[in-house]
Structures are given as C-alpha cells and as structure tokens.
Length: 581
Ligand SMILES: [Fe+2]
Image (cartoon, rainbow, N blue to C red; front, side):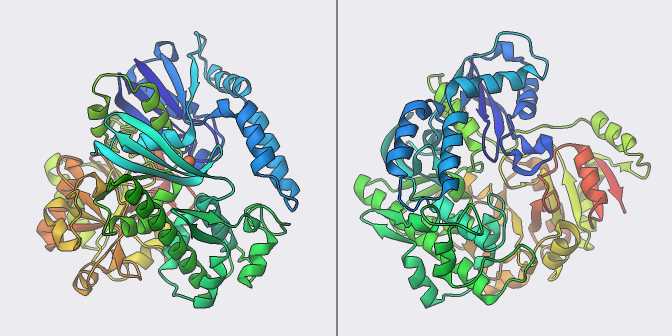
C-alpha cells in the first residue's frame, strides 16, 4: 500500500511517502520553493521528490492522506464558529477569517484545488482518493508511532487544529484513543504567537526567538500578575483569556487586541527597534507561563491515567526549553518529542493513520530517521559547481576529508557542511549544517553577525559524540541517549566547567540544546566529530542550520553554494568537494 501524506495548508507544508508503512521520503515544501514555511503552498515539489525517491508516479499511489480534518468544515466547524466563537466584542477580522476558512476548507473545493495543482505538474492519470484526517489526531500519530512506548499519554498543543487548541490522547499498542480537548479560543499556541508579534518578531518563525530572548530576562512580579489575567490553570486544564487575542478591537495586529497592549502597558515593539529590559522580561514571563501551564496539563493527565510516559507534539512542542522542563518533572518517566512537531509532521501523521493496518507499522515507524530528504550524487554536485562557474573547488579522498575539515575547524574556520540526505524538521543535524569550534568564545557572535545575520542573543547548539554525552548532559534521561537527544529538542542546564569548555554553545541562562551523535544514526558526522576530538580533545562541534536569515535550510548543492557566497562562511564542503574563500 502506497500512501502519499500531505500537509497542504497554512505554514510548514510538506509531503511524505509510506510504502507498506515504511517511510521512504519526507520533506518540507519550503526546502524546494526556497520560501520560508511555504505557507499555503500545495506541496507538489516535495511530493515530486517523494514519488521520485520511491520510483513511483501518482498512478501507483493508493491513497493521499491529508493531516487536516476538512470534512469537519461544512457542518461541525460552521456550528462551532457560530456557537463557541461568538462574542459581542468580536471584531470583524476574526469573523471574516472564519468565513474564509469555512469556504476554503470544504472538502469538494479543497480536493479540486489539490488535484489541479498536481495536474499542473503534468500528471494525466487517474487521481488518487484523498482522505482527510483530523489535525490533532495526525499530530498524535506523528509522535506516538515513532516513539519507543507501548503505552503513553500524548499531548498535542499548537495554535489550533480545527476546533482543538490542545488535546490529550492515550496510545496503547498500535491504537490511539481520544481523551479530551481544550478548544478555541483557549489556545496556548496563539497566545505565544500574539506575544511573539507583540515583541516585534514574525509569527511561525519568531516563537523560537521569544524562547531565546526569555533567557535574557528576569522575573517581573507585577508583569506576572498581569499575565495571570491572560492564562491560568483551571481544574486539570487551563484557560486563555480570549479578549487578548480575539474578542476586542485591534489596532496593531491581527494576532492580538488592544486589550493586550493596555494590559502590558508598553507599546508593541517594531521589528527593528532595540530590545529593552521590558521586552526581555516579557519574553521571560510568557515562556515561564507556558512552561507552568504545560506542566499542569501534563501532571493532570499523569494523575488521571496513571501513565508516566509522555509524547508531545504540535508546534508548541518545538519549544525545547519547555520540553526540557517537562522532561525534568519528577512524575514524568520518559518524554518523547518528534523532530517535525510543527504541522509538517501531520503529513506523516495523516499517512500513519491511513496505513495503520499495514503489518509491523510500529516497528517501521520506530526506525524513523530524520535524514529522509534528498541526496545528491557527485555528478550532481559537480554539475552545480560548474553551472555556478566555480573553478577553485577540489575533490578530496575519503581518507583526507575528515582530518582536513577538523583541522580547519580547529583553526577557527566556519564550515558549511552539505552531506547525504537532508533532514526533515526545523533542526539541521549534521547533513545540512554550519559547523564551528565551540570553544572559541566569540564564535557565537561571529556566526550571528557574519553568517546568519541575526539577533546577537540567538544561541547555537552543540553536537556531541555519543561516547562523551555523559560529560556534557548531567541529567541522564531515562531514554539514554536515544532519539530524544538525537534531534536537539530539549534544553538542559550545564555547569560552569562545561560553560568554560564550550562557551559558544551555552545560552545566557546556562542551558544547552544538545544533539547527541551516534555512529549508527550518522556515521559521517560521527566521524567528523571524532576527527575533531582527536585534534582538540573536545568531542563537540557548534552545529546550526545551513542557511542565512530568512531562508529555509539549504537543500541542493546550488542552494549551499548560494548561501556560501552570500555569507561569511569560510569553507563549503559538498560531499567530498571543497570550496574555500
Ligand atoms: Fe498543528
């Protein structure tokens, strides 16, 4: 059974291919369109990659699975919006947005829209049947199936999926059952997004900046009291005051109302305005609130179901500081987060739902590797180099490449590293990465300034050889150094000795967001880390995504070449081909 999984609306559109339940390919559309998030783009390019990877055409696809519940819109969502989202103070924008949503998501309309997009790529055969799967259930499958658990609480938290803002599910064996949901307008994701925009960052890409900025702030008790009016624990759930994001006049934003501006007592920050102590403290406050409310939700579910394994999914689960906090709760036995926790993961989750009766699907899902994007041959790399009229490159022997790159890293070079299959998910994990020596104190500032062209407070992550992980991650998690730490999804606190050893990858609050690299998950990257260790005695490299401000992670060799020549990178390594400035 061949299933093409799609997430075709909103930000983070994506495609994946399941062949008899085995993940053949999975990638975000933005990597191919080169437009960050590829919002509302039908993912025909990532689909073309997936089909090509499987040697298939749409004719051989048995089902298209979409990770959104469009079939709820003609009836249920129409009723939900009119009953649950009505308010005398509701502004016109929200009303219009709902009306558009009700029309655009009607299955018959959306199916035709999908079909036409694929027909425009030249496909002439019969079109596969499209199946719509509820968004939060798709998120739940995306995280539970690859998890190591046979029994787990699954918590999905995002802006919203149809009516749901947060939901709790139970995974047992191969089955997932619904427990409860907290519906719109009580959205933690939308509240965090509102504060993201209030702080002058872009929604969907700026939430990570708020999380990073939070570390620069401190507790402001008066502000925390104000935010008690914005969101609070309620029984074993939580509530978000809808007046700050929905039900009041709005002047500055479609994400927050004037009541939020009044509550906070400062004007919304414009994108290029300087960040002040008040902004830092606001980021601290909203991050702190999120962590506490999520902990409340998790602990409530643990108490009710007497299960201590937790799976987290949905866009909010990209918050690695929150994930670290949840993982550290005493009552939590193990906490598993999927690397594509944003909506791109629903391409895979929807496909899992569709293929859930395939034999051994859980075993296949547990073999998930984040390296499931495109790979480029030597010939393709050489063609891109020649097309770009680059003559100064050289091809190195396998035996020379790693010692050479390790030496140049030790000398302070910033290296663009393009190898093997591209990663899915927001993090570069050693195949489309920018690498540097983390012991160089000013390396963080240098990369932010010269390569990433981004805010100076933004932190970088360490990639650590698995054999030395214990030396850097003091709290040994129950999962060992398995998938949890292979994907840079949890922040952990480190001591002063480690801060001195790898200053470029320790955030101002004393945390790191480690990626533990094992030989079995990425042999080449493991080899490079080993070569760097042989030279320096340090089994760690600074690892950040191979891109510059505002662009998606590079996909093709040509993308990497473009990024190399438009930034302060010193060396670009494409397979065994090396370009130096
Ligand atoms: Fe979502």
